[in-house]
Length: 284
Ligand SMILES: [Zn+2]
Image: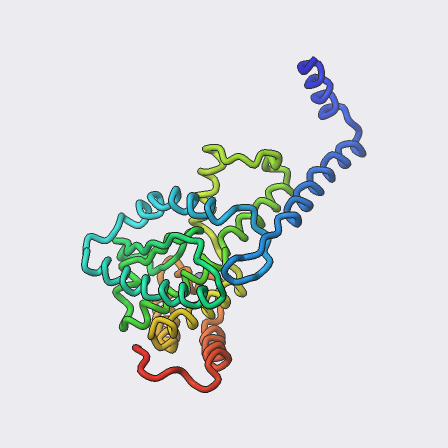
């Protein structure tokens, strides 16, 4: 019975007139579009309505699964334990400032953060996987001049995680895959092949301009909450601007052909968020 059905279906694929094939294609496209727009979720941290189809727990699992490959591609974790501990300390100060902000609203951070200093001395980069794994290459780390600048970099990456930019990109990617008919949209299960594909796409993820600006704004807020001067982020932009002549564009710069403009935006965020001026005694 099943075999007969399959044969009939195969027959449809071969002999069906153009009109019917178009209707089937349209059906697949429609399914992709409808499932994309049905994926609506309110972000627990930012309160935004977003199109994602992963839970926060799934984001954490996905990030942890992709982490070893990311570390491998950047020559492993940096052997300098003191530097690693320093990065952790600054990262966790920022997370404390996040927790405090959330507590005031009766919210909790759903993610598991971890900060990794990578051995890579060539590629100047910092990035985050969904769920809270944050990375920074030694090449970028060495360029940083102050603790505030390190906080700026990590704060920006925390911003990507809590704004769920990775999960959003993945839902968009699934939409385009559905539209080209490349993916089987029916299964909600994550098999090995799908996981491998996801890890590949996670590592080459490019965010849009708005995602970068939203993360910059989080960077400003978290820095101030942790006692750092957010103007240090402007210093980071300048460092990246200077060093963007390399073979690969740093994550910070990749989507921004006009860094000057982004510096202006950071200044504008600071003015908007702290109209009476920044608190005294912030660390640069
Ligand atoms: Zn970014």
